[in-house]
Amino acid sequence: MKSLTIQSFLKQASLLDLLRNGEGSFLMNKEIFHKSMQTGKFEGPYLLENTLDYNELIHQWSYGMIYTIDTEHKESSIRFKLRLREASGSDLSINKKELKIGISYYLLNGDKIRGPYFLNRNTNVNRLAIDLSTKSVFVISKKQSFELVKLEKIAS
Image (cartoon, rainbow, N blue to C red):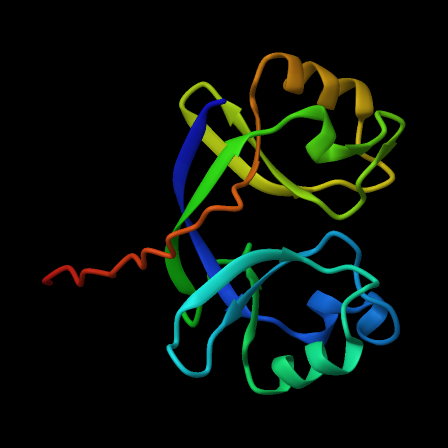
């Protein structure tokens, strides 16, 4: 299986990033990252699931320990190298019958990678199957090094 490393961004998670409508149940299959209070290092990705301890997650969130991928690339985001791996059908579906709603994926088009995109009820399953067959769908790898990317200032 092919793997890629891309530049990506992490942001401190908001409740809207974690919970349906900002309250109640977790957004299923949402990838989150954890920042250790002791070491300051990142861990993950982890998937939000109903089995998570709601109170513990909210506690960690309140201390600024929960992060998600930032699709807007804000100045306050943490820039790092994200490892992706080629996706399989089981990464994106349950028993080849239904999509894993909420899973993020990236598309390789020529030499450019685009994303993240998120599986939802409107995802074109036929198009996704074609992209899988051409090995152009990638998902976040479980193995991350969290190598930060330093911004270099350009002299004016």
